[in-house]
Each structure stands twice: as C-alpha cells, then as structure tokens.
Amino acid sequence: MDPPPPSRITDEYWQYITWGAIAVGAVAIVALVAVVFGLLSGTGTAGAAHPEEAQEVVATSVTVPVKAIEIVNVPVTEPVVIRSPRIGRTARYHQDGTVVIVGVTMDVCERHDGMLRASGTIRNDSKLGQSFGYVIGVDLRRAGNGSPIAALEASVEDLAPGETADWSVEQVSSRIVKLRCVVTDLTVTPVDGA
Image 1 (cartoon, rainbow, N blue to C red):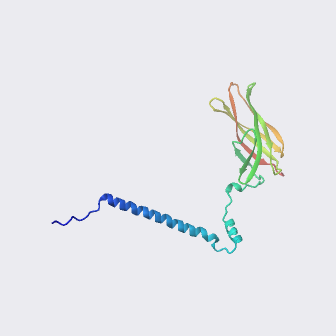
Image 2 (image 1 turned 90 degrees about the horizontal axis):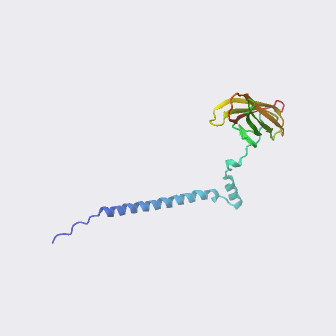
Image 3 (image 1 turned 135 degrees about the vertical axis):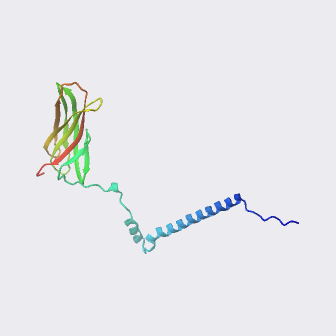
C-alpha cells in the first residue's frame, strides 16, 4: 500500500490566508488609532479637579475664524489706488489696513457734437471724517470690439465727508463711433490738514 501523498496548500487557499491577515491587521490598526486618539483627547480635562477648570481649558483651545476678525478703520495717510472700482453704488475698499468708502456713478457715456463724453458723480462716504481728492481714470473704447480710443482722467479736489461732486471727461472725435466708457481706476488722496 502506497503512503498518501503529502497535502499541498493551493494558491487559492494562500490568497484566503493573505487577505484574512490583511483584514485582521487593518482592524487592529483602526482599534489602535481609536485608543490613542481617545487618550490624547482626554488629556485636556483629565487633570482638572473642578468642572470650571475643564471649561476653561476647552475655552482656551477655541480659535476665532479669520472672517470674524474685522479690519479696523485706519485713516488714509497716502494715496490709495483702487483698480476697477464698483460703479453705481457705495463700495468699501480695504488696502494695507486703510479703508476707503466711496460711491462712483457714470451717468453719461456718449458721442455728441463731435465730442466723446463720460460723466457722473463721486461721493465721499468716509466714516473717519477725512476729506479726499480723487483722480478718476476713464477709458473710452469702441463698443463693438473694445479697442481703445482714449485714456482720460477727471479730478475732484477736496471733497468733504458726505459730499458729492460731479466729474466729467471729454475727447474730440470727428468719427462716428459707438462708445463704451470704463472707469479703470480711482486714486484717493487725503487732503492735508484733514
């Protein structure tokens, strides 16, 4: 009688063993992480003798969101250039800690009697009682393709808080064009002695 052949473990059986070992290892790692995390999170209040002390420890670990920290109004001490200011309503601009509150409108953008004109108003809404001078940069462009016609500036001097002033720019043009006017920038300069 021949002896029975030695038993061999098949490849399929080895795969079961391998995947089983991986699953057991993963469960062990998750359990270890949970235990360590529980120990670390419990150390903040474990040494506190009274509930008041535990609350104090928790309170000191709270961080204030960045959005909740409001930038304080700082007087404008040197010229501030605002690129592409909002048109048609009062806007608040922050730059290097300074705050500029101003309203710019554009009421006219037209070609009339051989002149290209843009005009509107500007209002100083400073909350710090500062008077400002303004330089309003306006680009006159062709409405269809946006090609530039002229880059002009309008100046408004010594505008007190709460006051509104008119501004306008114009350019001679013998050609009939459809016009588009764009306020490109606004330079805000504090008036000396304000």
